[in-house]
Amino acid sequence: MLRKEEIRQQIKRRKRQFTEEQLRELSLAIIDRLLGHPRIKKAKRILMYYSLPDEVYTHEAIIQLVNEGKEVFLPVVLDNFEMELHKFSRKDNMSEGAFNIMEPIGHKYTDFDSIDVAVIPAIAYDEKNNRLGRGKGYYDRFLSKIPLAYKIGICFDFQKITDIPADNNDVPVDEVI
Ligand SMILES: Nc1nc2c(c(=O)[nH]1)N(C=O)[C@@H](CNc1ccc(C(=O)N[C@@H](CCC(=O)O)C(=O)O)cc1)CN2
Ligand SMILES: Nc1ncnc2c1ncn2[C@@H]1O[C@H](COP(=O)(O)OP(=O)(O)OP(=O)(O)O)[C@@H](O)[C@H]1O
Image (cartoon, rainbow, N blue to C red):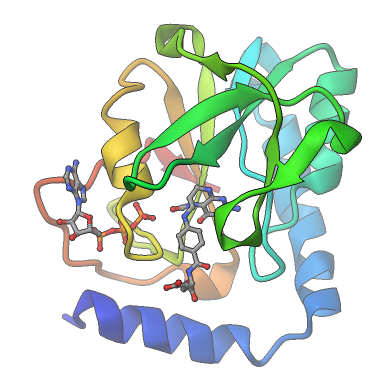
């Protein structure tokens, strides 16, 4: 089994074979599956992520979900490796946070039990739905706070691997799409 850092390097090499435009193109089918997913259809409150250029592109999907009447929440990174959730309202009510990620301005949302579905990005997922993140532990720490949410892992096909070395902190997702 490869160690976590080796997997991160391997996936980075795979990503470099695509342009940002190609990754956008690959995102379309994945986002279609996500928006058509029965859990998303039923959900009232959804934790999404505001994608970076090397991730499955979510900017339009977020707007679409809001237009369908969902409440969408996004992570806001704090400087102690914790993250909180803020409700997304509109694109021009955001500011750039840590790691160049756009984050909603406004109050933190703490009613975690009301989140129906959480859509979780990753560097890689394995066949047991274990997740490998960017190595800072933000989602590892956060996911245990939303035990009731149905967790959907999302990544490109080339990010799906056989095995990720899981440790005690790692919370697997319910499904990878
Ligand atoms: N879109 C998005 N939002 C997210 C995450 C994410 O992975 N994607 N997070 C998931 O945790 C949290 C933020 N954590 C992050 C941690 C590292 C990097 C990052 O770009 N790391 C660089 C190395 C930078 C450095 O070490 O200073 C890298 O991966 O190359 C980004 C986000 C919360 N919000
Ligand atoms: N629940 C937790 N409580 C405290 N520390 C944690 C927790 N989860 C992970 N960590 C620490 O965070 C660091 C990063 O862990 P790991 O490499 O598993 O993160 P990751 O899953 O790749 O990243 P991320 O969750 O940011 O996407 C490690 O030093 C780990 O010990």
